[in-house]
Every structure is written in structure tokens, then in C-alpha cells.
Image (cartoon, rainbow, N blue to C red; front, side):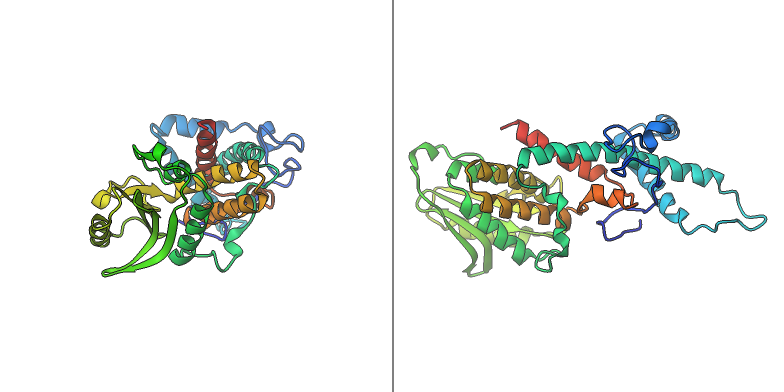
Length: 333
């Protein structure tokens, strides 16, 4: 699948008609007048998917195929040579793919508005290109570990920190009082260094291992060493957390798995809490970290609506799903 600067994955490009609405997105929700979708209903792709798609996975595969053809269409000659295969069938796929993305883009615009309302007066972090910052680009685990440790230090209550990491609350938590944890980066021990160590002295110990690469790599041997070190510590409550991009992993060596997607949702929610506490600088930095995770680790495009307005169209389904997940998390508060 082709890739481009807007993120990884099947982000095929296609020029959007210039006669769309002022906001560059046709269909429901457009604010600039009747867009393409309001004049040409997406009957073709509806028929295609109704006939050929019976499950969500098949839907995504079909959508990606349409976007691939839309990207290849730019390379087609204006006039086909005599005897060349007919292009009409391919053009139908191209048109269906473009209309599908336009339809999803209208939903994306509405989700960004709702997310922005939650974060106001701050912007949604997807509206800023955080992949352009050299310190954040790529998958530098040290940088992301440093920033995650900084955010953890800003969390005032033990209960909130445990929930941020997806850990069950200790039974004795009500007796802890207002103690502040000691959070250490790169703690050396006999088998190497521990990424992040959170210690509530004589009460609880949390070891966080940060991985920015795909979860396919086997970390079990490394985590076994960490678990052995933890077993030798005096705290009664001991927890390990593996932060990774991999979805659907089991609990290796008793470490809870916290995906970067879950971390991004929690960072957004934490940013809202800091804003409500009038800690606007901390809130802004926390949301910036969320944006760096979303764009550089999850592969979501920066400023997606502006990209579509400029004439670029790509598969926005993952961005739509991610924003829906954040809004669902906020509704649980």
C-alpha cells in the first residue's frame, strides 16, 4: 500500500473537486454550502459494500483497495492507447473510494469539533503537526519514556495514577494519605535498567516498561528479569505495566498491557482535568504529548481536515475510531 507524509498505511491520494463546499468537505455537516456529497449521493459504494461486504474486516479491506486504485488513477494517461483495456470499471472504483472518504471526512470533522469542545480553550492535539518536531519524530523510546514519566509526576492522587495506568486499586489505598510517589527514570539494577519505577515507600511499587515498536518483538526474557527484581523489593503491592503499540496481547510475566492508544485517551482526559484545575500550561504539554503519540506512534495524520481541504484524501477510518474512543472515555467520567 502507498504511504505519504500524512501518516502510514493506505493513504492513497486523489484530487477533490474544486466545486465542493467552502470547507473542502462535501456531505452532511459541511458549513460552506452544498458539497459534492449533497449533490451526488454515494449510491455506488453503498451498492458495492451491500453486495460484497459482510463483516467489518472485509469492509476495511474493500475500502483500502478503493483508495489504492484512487491513488493509481493519477498515473493513468489522459487518453488510453488504441486496444488498451477499458478504464471505466476502474474509474467506478476510484469514484467510490473518493466518495467514501468524503463521507467519512464529514464525520471526522464533526468528531474533531466535539473533541475540541471537550478540550477548549485548548486545541485538539491532532490540529497541530507534532511529527515536524525532531525530538518527537520517529519512535525514540527514551523521549517518550521521559515525557510519560513527567506526566506521571504531575498526577496528584495515587488513585488517579493507578487508573491512568489501568491498574486495580490496592485494597489499602484509603489508608495511604497524601503521600507523593518517587518516580525514577532508567533505574540501574543487576540485569540492566528499568524504564520507569514508581514507588510509594513501603506501600506500592510499579515498574513501567515502554516500547514504541510493534508488539511483535518478544520481551518476555527482559520482563522476567524485571519481575525477579520486583519480587525482591519490600513493597507489598507490586505491579508491572508494559506500554506498547501492540493490540490484544496477553499479560507477559504478570505485566499488565497498556496500549499507546489507551495512553493517548488517558492523556487527553488528564489534559481536561488539568485545564479544569486551571493548570493550563501542564494541560497544554499533556495534550501535546497525546498528539505526539497519536501522530508518531499510532500513525494518525496531523490536521486531517486541512489536508482534505487542500485536495488530499486518505483512509480516515482509524482517526474516526480513535476520536470516538476518546469521547466514549470522557462519557464515563
